[in-house]
Structure formats: structure tokens, C-alpha cells
Amino acid sequence: MTPWIIQIAPIVRRRLHSCCTSLVKKNKLPPRPKWTPEMEKELEEKFLHGGRGPGGQKINKSNSKVQLKHVPSGLVVECQETRSREHNRKIAREKMAFQLAVWTNGGNPIERQTALHEWEKQGKRSRERKSKNKHDRHEESRREERLRDMQEEQQLVESLFRD
Amino acid sequence: MPRIRPSTFRKALAIDKALPFLLPECRSIAAAKQELQWIKQECHTKRQVFEFCKLRRNHYPLQYLLKSQPFGPLDISCKRGVLIPRWETEEWTMDLAQRLVSNSELRLVDLCTGSGCIALLMKHLRPKLTVNAFDCSPLAISLASQNAQKLNIHVQLGLQNILDDSAAAALPDFDIITCNPPYIPHSTFVKETSTSVKLYEPKLALLGSFEFYENLVKTWLSKTDAFVYEVGELSQCTYVQNKIAQDSILSKLWRVGFKFDSNHRIRVVYGYKQANTTVDWSKIFQDFGELKH
Image (cartoon, rainbow over all chains, first blue to last red; front, side, top):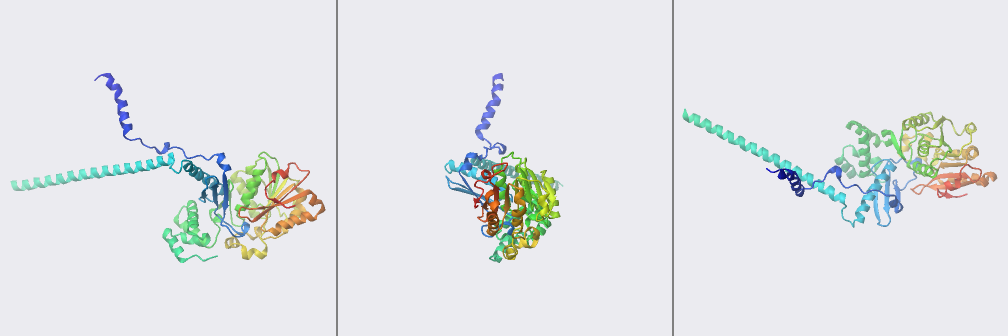
């Protein structure tokens, strides 16, 4: 073989692989939309603590809900996942940043969403492939076993006849 | 309050066996699910989850079960015998702290500190403040010192009944005074206070009408440049306003305002001196609430 072929071979191999599938990696997804200080100016923030009632020392509410409204788009998000109001505010802002990114994209899914969707599909495909492989392997071994059994039986029958 | 339907209980039972116990306090399945999740985060065994949920059915406060309550960025420990910090208090304290310049070296006194939430949060957000906190309950002071130690925030705590005239006399002058006094009058305690609060929170930290506001005008106003007091009803606000307006010297020197919480309830009465102060309080308290006097 000439040295030229030896040099080119790995590159060709890699190209062949890359044109087949481009895998999405979970740790290299496009980043989440970031919350920016400019967005803060267009917000209306509301704290909901179960509406009516005297409040203060008379009531002891364990939950707190934060509602954000983005005025130009009319988007509304809510968060009451944690007991801490500060934490809820942070989570609500992350949610809002995400919604806004979708909104500015004209309602179409953003890069991260499509990548995540692709990642899920890819995982499903790989699971299916693995399960198919496993079933094939087992099927193969079963067939072999059956064959062996038949052969043994045949040998037994033959040996009986010989006697 | 409308009763919870048996069908709701059945639905809750289908989701989780512990869920129906939470319904009387949470009122809806969504809220109960949320609370169950918080309980499960703190518990190690299923049996403990059940025990907690059964206590919740008896209106035992969640904060005493989980032993903590988030207060701004802090996590305040809670114990039987000391009032649980409320979100209304958190709201005005955060607002007040953010109004102070970040390196302001003011002296703050927090009265009726309870778990120490206001004092600790102020000191945490504005570390240059000098903070003194007082309470008349030994339980509260021990919990507050525990909290201060756990959060590594330095505040000076003192066991003192602030209604005593001698308490103020022993202190040097300071700049601002914050207080969340007991403000539920006996007349409305039975009717308006929720079962959980009535049964399990200390009456010492709840019951009071005008004592603390009277005490404020009488003794503490002379020691301070500004005050922020939480209130339960409008009459307590107008009481302070009238007391100051009626006094010829005080009325010239002091401005008084009311602040509402985000539930549109009157929550705070505040005031500041117009002259002879270390900082310009009128600028700090701009738009904090409505000025009335």
C-alpha cells in the first residue's frame, strides 16, 4: 500500500461517520435564554398570597406565588415551586426569558428546544436499537440451542437404531 | 370557608395516600401536592411523611415542622414558642434595606425581634449597619442567637421588655428603629385569626392593640431619627399619626406615612425627622408609602 492512502484513510472514515449522524450531546446543548436587565424594565411583578383575608400575623401562609407580566408581548408566567419568594422570583424570570426567546422567534421553537427534542429522539432511537440488538442476540442463541437439541436427539435416535 | 368535597378527598387519595391529610390546610389538590413535595424533601422515611401530614391536618404550622422559613435570601429557623416570619414583613424589610445606601453606617434597633428575621436580614443586606435587637421572650432571644450563629451574621441581642421605660434610657441614640410588635386586638383574635395561628403560635407575639404604638411615641421617638412599625389595621396607623400631630413639638419635626403590602392591606406606619439627621430620610423614604403628615 502507498503511504498516500494510509494518510487519507482516517479523514475519509471520519467524514463518512459525520455525514451519517450528527449526535446531540446533553452537556453541549445551546444555552438557556439569559435574563437581561433590559427585560426587567418591561415587567410587571405581582405577588399572590391567596387573595382575601386580613393577612399579617393573623394568617400564616407557607406558600408564595410570583406572577410576571411582560407588557409589550402580554406574556404571563407564574412560579410557586419553592417556599422562598426570592427563589420563586428567580425561577419566574428564567421561565419568562425562555418564553420571550420563543416569542421573538415568532412562536417557533428556539435552538435549545429543537436540540433537546433531537436529543430525546436520539435517545429513543438508541434504546430501540439496543433492544432490537438484544432480542436478535437472544433469538440467535435460542435458534442455536434448538439446533443443538435437535442434533442431540438425532444422535440419540441414531445410536438407538445402531444398537 | 366552603367545605372540601368528599370527591376531592378521594381524588387526593388516588394520587398519594398522605395527600388527603394536607387538604384541610391547603384547600386545593394543587397546593397540597406542592406542600407534600416540600415535606418529602425534608423527611427521610415514609412514616415521617405521614406523621407530618397528620400534624398538618391538625393545623400544625408547616414552618414548625420543617423548622425553617425562607426570609428574603436567608433561611430563618423556626421553633415552637416564637412567631414565624411572615411574607409581609419580608416584603417591607427588603424594600427598606434596598433604600439604604449599601455602605451606610447607621445604627439600627429592632424591637420585638422574635426569630431575629428583620435584624438579620437588614444586617445581611447592609453589612455596615450596627444592629441591636431586643425581645422580652427568652425563647425568642435564644432562637435569634442561634439564627445569627448559623447564618454567621453579627447582631447584638438583648433580653428586655421594651414597654419598660428603662429599656430605652439605657441605650445611646440611634438612627432607625424597626419593629413588628404584636398587633392583633383581643376583639378580632378569635374571629379573624386562622386556626393554625390561634392554636400553635405564641399569643405573646400576637396579642396587642395600641400599647406598642403608645410606647413608641412616648419613649422611643426621642431616641431615633426614623421608625418603621408593622401594623395590623388602619386604626393603629392613625393612632400614631394623631399622637404626633397633636404634639406641638413632634408635629413640626416628624413626618408620618403609611405603607400597604402587595395584598393591598395596610401594613406599615413609618416616620422620620425632617431636620438634624445624619442622612436625608425624606429621600430614603420617597415612595416607600403614602405620606400622611
